Image (cartoon, rainbow, N blue to C red; front, side):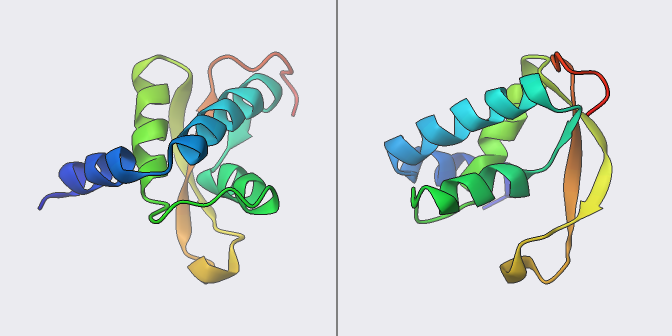
Length: 102
């Protein structure tokens, strides 16, 4: 299975409540911040105790936001999630941020 198929399969098998909450949080953050990472969304979902089997499903949500013009790739940042051991994560620039200096 290739990378894209794995992301698509993770998304399709993700908990529907998790998918909806992740999408809503992405758009909420994109309107309020200049830059975001997947950590920002996953940390929120963890705080709300909204779980799914495979967090890779977030890749499909981020890709959809790129294709719809909401996010632009902006480099990489260091993950703040302990499970990621400071690994790099994609940094995204919001194309819809209403606050320009955050």
